[in-house]
Length: 166
Image 1 (cartoon, one colour):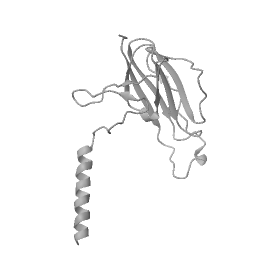
Image 2 (tube, rainbow, N blue to C red):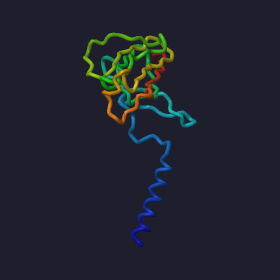
Image 3 (tube, helix red, strand yellow):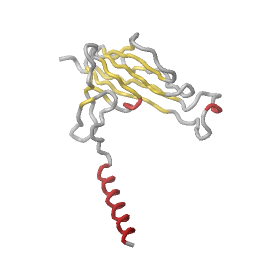
Image 4 (cartoon, rainbow, N blue to C red):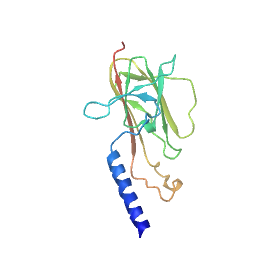
C-alpha cells in the first residue's frame, strides 16, 4: 500500500515537472552549427549567430537543424549535409533567394545517402535553404522494412538572415 502511494506521488511530481518544462529550450542545445543566440521579447526563437570556422568563415548545418534560423554576414559559407538513405535520399538543396549562391567546395566527398551543398551569402537579405525527402522511391517499397509507409514526405528548411557586414 505504502509503495503504491510513493509511486503515485513520484508519478505526479514527474508529470508536473514535465508540464512545467514544456516549450522550454533544452539547456545547452545549440544544434550542429554551434550557434549562440537568444530569443525575442515574445519568447519566439530568433536567428542565432553560428560559430564560424576560421579562416574560411564557414559553418555546418544538418537535418538536425531543420526549422532553425541563422544570422550571418555576406561572405559567410554554409555547408549543408542532409542524412537520408540510398532508398530515401533528400532532393537537391535549393536556395530561395539570390542573397545566397551555391558554390563548389571541392573539400570532401559525400557518403552514400547524404545530400549536401555549399552556399555562400553574397548580399544582405533573407534566404531559405530547402529540400524534401520522399519516404521511399517509386517502385522501391519492397526495399523498405515492412513497417515503413511510403505516403508522407519529410521537408527540410533553414532560414539565413544575411545582415550587412560591420
